[in-house]
Structures are given as C-alpha cells and as structure tokens.
Image (cartoon, rainbow over all chains, first blue to last red; front, side, top):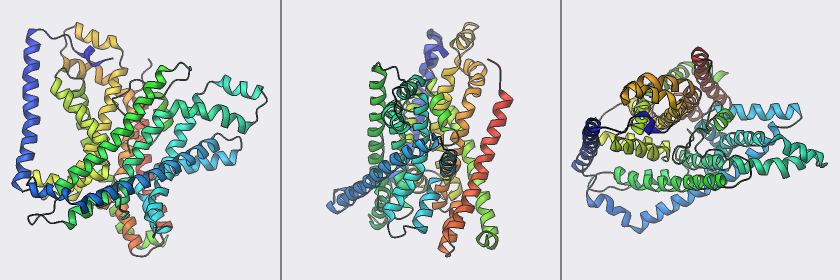
Length: 304
Length: 215
C-alpha cells in the first residue's frame, strides 16, 4: 500500500490544513536547527578558527591516514567475513550431522554476542599488539555468521530442480555446491550481502575502543590534541568525520541499490533479495525471506 | 568461575545497567520510530522529508560516532550536565528509531489496500485511519522484525560501556584491566547478554502468539 492510499486527495479545507501543518512543522524543525546553531556559535564552535584546522596539511594527512586505516580494516573484514560466511553456510548445509551442528552452534553463539565484546575479547586475549588484526578478526567472525545465514537463505531459495538436474548429470556434492548452488545464491543475495558490508564498514568504528587508529580514533585524537580559542574542536571534527562516514556508507548503499535494480531487470527467474532487508539478530533468514514487501530507500538497512 | 564470584557485585551492577539502558532506549526508539513512521506516510511534505532525512542520515552513521555526537555536541546545545546513562540511552534510542521507523513503514505496507480505502470511504481522517485501522493490523506483521531490532539494540548497548555507562562491557573491560584471564570473563559477559536477548525473543514470541489471528 502506498502512502497516498492513507488519505484522500485533499479538498480545499484539507489543503489549507495541510499547509498549516507544513508551515508549523517546517518552523518547528527550523527553530530546532536555529537554536542549535545559535547555541553552538555562542559557545564559539562556529568560529572560523575552529574550522580552519582542516586547512593544516598535518590534520589533512591524519584524516587521510584514518580513512586508509578504516578502509584497510574494512577490506580485511570484508574478505574475511565473506570467506567465513561461505564456509559456515556450506557447513550448515552439510550432510554430516557433527559438521552441521558445530557450524550452527558457532553461528548462533557469535551472532548473539555483541560485536564489541568479541572484538575486545580477541584483542585482549590473543592479538593485543595487533589491533588491526583484532578488529578485522572480530568483524569477520560476527559478520561471517550473518553472511552465512544470508548465503544459506540464498542457497535454499535456488529452485529445487537446479540441484536435482545437477545430480542427474552425475555431478558430485561439492561440484553441485560450487558450480550450481553457490553462484546462484550469491547472485540472488548480492544486495543483502552488500548491505551487510555497509554494516561492516560502519562497525570498523568500534576499532576506536581497542585504540586502532581508524577514522573515529583519529577524529578523537585531533579533537583532544588541538586547542582553538581555549576549546577543543569536537563539534567541527565530528561534523567533518561524520560527513566522510556517511558519504562512504551511502556510496556502498548506492551500489547495493543499483545492483538490486539491475538484478530485477534481468530475466533469470531467480528473484533478487531486497537491498534493505534487515538481517541482524534473532532470525536473519526469516527476515531476509520475509521482508521483500517493499524496499525502503537505500540500504544500510541492517540493524547493527 | 572465580572471576564471577570474586566480582559478583560489579557483575550484577553491569547486568542491571545493560537491562536498564536497553529498556530505556527501547522505549525511546519505539515512540520516536512510530512518530517518524507517521511522518513518513503523512500528507505533509516537510514532515515526510524530515522523516526520510532522519532515516537516511542515522542509518548510515556508525553508532560509535553517534555516541560521540551525544557526548560532545548535544550537551553544548541542550541541557549541559546530563548523565552518561541518559545520553547513552538517547544515542541508542535515536539510532534504533530509524530502524523501527522503516519496519513500521513496511508493516503499514502489508495491510491490505481495501482496509485503508474502507476507512477513508466512511470518512475517517488520516490520523484516524492510521491509528484505528492500519497500525493495529500492521502491529502483527511488525512484531517479528521488531524483536530482531530490540535484540540488536541490546547488543549495541555494549558500546555505551565504552562511554562510561555502567553495563556488562564495562565489567569485561574492568576485569581484563585487573588482569583476569579474558576467556572466562568473555564467557560470563556473553552469558549475561544471552539472558537478556533470550528474554526479549521469548517475550516477543509470546506477544506474537497472543496476537495471532487467522487470515
């Protein structure tokens, strides 16, 4: 049901009323913004000197390093989580009961523990001197579990005839999985997989708690080590860094939406998952399968 | 085992802290999310725009960054001197509200078209249609994804521990700072979170079976 079903085409009275709401609503939002801006400038956060710090090449270099560090951790975590995801998904679909159970237990446990706890545990327990690897490993474990569920849902969504046909041709179990089922599963689930990568990208910011010098940690260091007019430039730093984060995530989200739209156009008979299906927590599979009802604009749709 | 027994009162405080921050920010997220969903389907363009902007912005911001905003920017604008607990709950609640909003909105989309048309044809206004006809029916489809959202919220609340809110992650950090072996600490913290998340999913399953209607 589209939103317009909820109300009639407005008549003269409703038009007037809606206009009043529109004006009052905009005024309220603008007032909120105005109050924020006034208060911030009262405290000197909008002074030009506060924002001038981003003209220093040192700070620019710091930010660039932070972005690179974030992308490095993200790249490692993306590869790690996809590899782990494929392995766990295959293990969960295995014919051997112990393998299936072990994989299920692994997925269930690490999916329901907060990511921060896992990252911190890995960092303190095993990789104290290698915060990048601790971050990448923690992210890989958690997101690998989520990706495994996504892929499993994808494999299950491949029409049964495909598998049967492959077996009928005399393919072996491994061949069926690697050449018939997995490629189709990945294709069908690509938007969801990329949405989960957006979550992975956002979660690299947890590296700041284990002192990995990624973008957020850089931001905090910049803000707490620079003093402008006797104040720390938290507001300007957060605005700049926040913009970078949002831009990176929106770019990745845009990729997911684009792939979803392309996939919908192709006529392969395999339906494409919605890009913004909420995947995290309790029942990702159900969520993935059940949420094709509408695609909210742009992914980043996972809850974590 | 010793880690838990020797530091039980801290663990208990942490556990209660996790439950409290989860509860408070759930309420914030639910109320705000419903309001935003209402905005997004409303006939008033600026409100629709506001809802969309909120969801797009907050869903693409790392929660950790949002925590920084709430601890360093918000006190400069409104109410300086709020407790870390309140600031943390607000950050979590605002973040989660965007997910609640999207879920409720797709829930609204699953209510059969005829329902809203019938409501309109007997002369109900937009608010009446939404409040009396559509939302009560949407509730049923929205419950399972909502339970996922609140479980995710519980897990996300761990980040609040890094911002000096008393909760379980804070306990994990404290214990490892005191030199305890991380593995048993990890196990106990994980168990603490599992208890909360299982309680939530159990409660939602109960709710679901209560609200079940043959369709």
